[in-house]
Length: 388
Image (cartoon, rainbow, N blue to C red; front, side, top):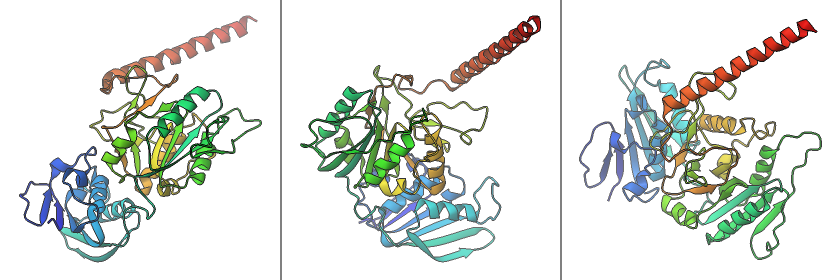
């Protein structure tokens, strides 16, 4: 029976009670406890050997080990000893930060040793990884709508009901009335009406849904989605351990719709790198979850509620994601599940992410077109004003 897990650079043969993981196991699409058939919170000790120094997926490594470590178990983290930040390897402080936010304050440090070469920190797990009321059989679904897509909302509700989830609720915020809600756990909450502001108050609506939700597994959707018949079946296969989760968003032509992308830099920052969809196998530190679909634990959502000052189309999802990243969230992707979307605003791409250079060239040409169009227009206006 496995009692200890060691995650290190090199491959090493497992022993009777020790599982050795290596670089080949670092894959954001892989769930380690599923891969090796390990029951969550059953391992006495886990250890990371120097992977925290440089590996970009250190948060993933920490979280995967945390899932398997029992309460009272020991988490040992060995790294190179340096106090210099940004010197191609993480400093002691950076690694300490990453562990603290990744494990959400559920550990205490009981020992550390440091010399000129090595730093070793040892932690004890105080609390379970999941919230005490969290179960894969309990789901809160929230739908925001403006009353213009009633048929799509009805279809979405029907697709949720068809999942046959043991315990669920559907919370609707918007102009919609469901005639059969006496038969199903469907709750209508007060809509958000702004008298003078023409912007869509989607953040306020989502925050109201989260406040009303009673289950830890929280799904908030815009009224352009539909669940496939096997959505919940696939969720049970994936498991209940995630912070923030997404899956392929499949459009009407079977292409991808804004489902796994990145936004580099701060929300309003100008930079050369073009935002684009990523191949599913690639993970980016600039990840963000597009706001139309949120699959998240309720306790995580309340760490970082959407900003009520922001409205539809004002990068509220980018701000939400970047703050969540700072708080220690990991953005998971389940490529074995999917959700359907009917968007008349967002274009589709094929299932392979578009060529990065081609996307960059198209964006540059588009920018040049609008730049010179504006210049020509200003020149014309200038000469017209002179003649008049």
